[in-house]
Amino acid sequence: MISSSSSNRTPGQCDAVLSVGAADPTSSATTRSAVGPLRLPLKNPESFVARFNRIYASIGLSLQVAENSGSLVSNLNLQKTAMDTDITPESLREKKCVPCEGGVPLISAESAQQYLNSLTGWTLDDEGKTISRKVNAGNFVKAMAIMQQIADLAESEQHHPDLHLTGYRTLTIEMTTHAIGGLSENDFVVAAKIDTLLA
Ligand SMILES: C[C@H](O)[C@H](O)[C@H]1CNC2=NC(N)=NC(=O)C2=N1
Image 1: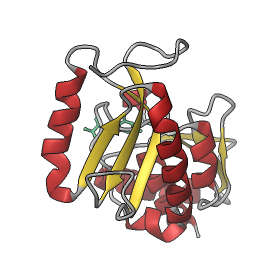
Image 2 (image 1 turned 30 degrees about the vertical axis):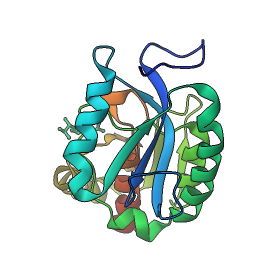
Image 3 (image 1 turned 45 degrees about the vertical axis):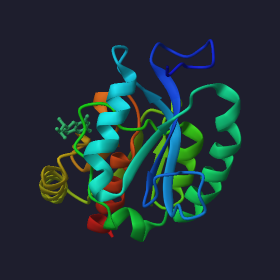
Image 4 (image 1 turned 180 degrees about the horizontal axis):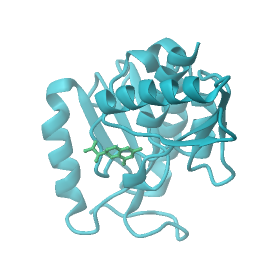
């Protein structure tokens, strides 16, 4: 039975480790992983995790959810060290967004800070749910052209920013994952690719 350990959690929320390249996220063979809270469906959370692992095993992904609080803490610390060294502008640009209608890991504000180190000019909002970058495009026509480039990128990734053009040339780009009401790795992947567009 999957249970969430802490009383301030919303229903269905647990700690989870998502690994690439190893079935056992605590194994030294694990090369890449992301950790953080995950909101599970309230009905049949076990079958959600089992189905996730069946579907994504073919591309080396595995999801592990904490059964209780204590045991995962040391694993999380171990994974966090591995994850911090994995995030680079290059590694983010190489990734492709994961189709998302919920069920992707939510990235904590603390992990978001690690990701931000690989981006240019992006800031995290106070709630830790959105990252944004403000750009002076020079003039209105250039701002519109940048918006179109970002739109093409977002379509190819199937992950979309909120774009605000104000004061005729100031573009504010916001990334959040609407399906989970916060940040997922998709936001940082698109942000890194936008950085390349703007460089
Ligand atoms: C299936 C498809 O990936 C989803 O509907 C996408 C589309 N683009 C999206 N973009 C963003 N920013 N958040 C989402 O949750 C989202 N959902």
